[in-house]
Amino acid sequence: MAAHSAGLRRTLRRLRLRWVTLTQPVLGPFRAKWRRSLMLRTMTVTGLVTGFTILIAGVFIVTSLSDDLYSSRRDQALQDSARATLAAQGQIDASERGSLSTLSATVRATVQDTSSSQMVYLRRQPGQPAYPEAPAASRTNDMLPDAVTAELSAAVVAGDEPQLWQAVTFVGDDGVPFPGIIVASTLTFPAGAGDYDLFIGYSLADTQETLAFMQRTLLVAAAVMMAFIGILVWIISRIVFRPIRAAADTSRRLAAGEANARMPLQNDVHLDMLSEGFNNMADTLQSRIQELDQLSEMQQRFVSDVSHELRTPLTTIRLASEMLEAGTQGLAPGQQRAIEVLGTQVERFESLLEDLLEISRYDAGHVTLETEPTNMVSLVEEVTESLRPLSPSAIEVHAAGGYSPIDVDPRRMRRIVSNLIGNAIEHGEGETIHVSIDSNATSVAVCVRDSGIGMSEEQTEHVFDRFWRADPSRKRTLGGTGLGLAIAQEDAAVHGGLLEVWSRAGEGTNFRLTVPRGDAVRSFVSPLQLIPDGYVSTETDRVVTSRWLRRPARLIRKDKRQ
Image 1 (tube, rainbow, N blue to C red):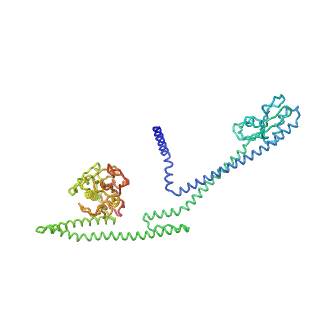
Image 2: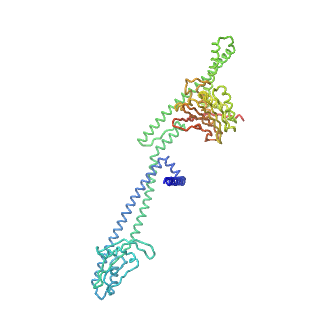
Image 3: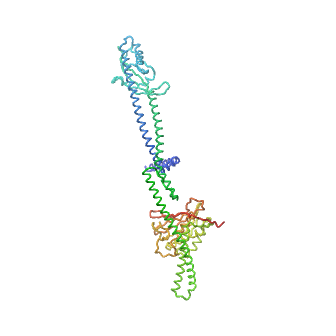
């Protein structure tokens, strides 16, 4: 039983997949547009409701007309048959006994003359004693005897009603069926001839044609009404959704940087209130953006000017520090230590100024990329060898790919890798640091993985923020300004790449740099996994992609091969 149920489920799954495969080319575009267009949904729902209403009304009208026509035609047939039956019975009563042989034809002719039907069938009721002189059965055509059913014959013999009728289907000489009614009554012949059944047939072909004409008329009227309602709904939808489209277009233009875009008035009290409120909001936003732009420009200029102005006195201090270091012989140990600290802090100050200048260049949009074919494996190994003496942890390089050169700025790539490995040294807790390199047809990736203290979800959110440190109280092995990862993010973005991080508290951190193979590559997939092997993504994990991926306003590329 379980095997049968499993097989049935597999069959249903295959049928469902088959159905999706067959209908996707047809329903896919409509389904996508249905999800994105409120106007389409409104028009479709309105059309369906209107169509359903027209369908119900049409069925009701057709049914009512059909019943009325049928009832009217049936009543006419019954009245006509009653008149013909009375005339025929009067003819029988007035006839003489000796005329029985011709009485059947006379009765049939009387019925045809006094009724609107030419379909007459006269026969002696079954179950009566034989009478040699009784007239034989007669009929005007062969359709009527074939249409008389046994139920109608039995009801006439029972004699419960003076007239009985039954709806039947006649088949014409051409083989085409058409509806009709048979009205049955009883005639009493003189002497021993007994009772005769009189069947009069009435064709309803004209009623059927009338009803078909009415159905065609209603169908055409419904189609015209649906077309008219569709056009009306389309026009109304265009009018109703015009303010929404105007607001969407204005929002899109504002988002694209068109600061003077405003929503036009719609000649409606409520919609004009919406337009005025939207425009006031746009004016306020433009004002605030201008203020922020001015403040940002002032801040950038201040940082750049201060950084440049500090370079001259800092150079003087560094020269003085070098002179002091050269003459430390004969000084007390405390004085020698002070001179050493002075030199270290001067170097750190120079590093901070350099980072601030680099950030100011990115903020101002003055970035120059000096690209050249670079072997990323050699570059990573070179950076690793330079940092290995400063690391208490072992650093292992795993190069599965990336040997073919790509056009990048090697100075910026070294800075990114140096920042990532230096960050792993600072937080690796002495555990082995794994540096992986791989490539595919569209990109080259570098991963730096440590098994140190890791970061919480909140800390991972801020890992690319400027001057942010996960634990400012920790002793730093390589110094640092808090700008390393922010600059690395900008260096990756200016190459069109991504810098991503995965971290779990107590289990380490993994940074992944992915760089596309040239400017022509618009979409790429990293050849390395961001979440390390052996780890399953959970709700406590946090994966952050470098979010500030704006390109500088003035990006200058220099190819050293030229």
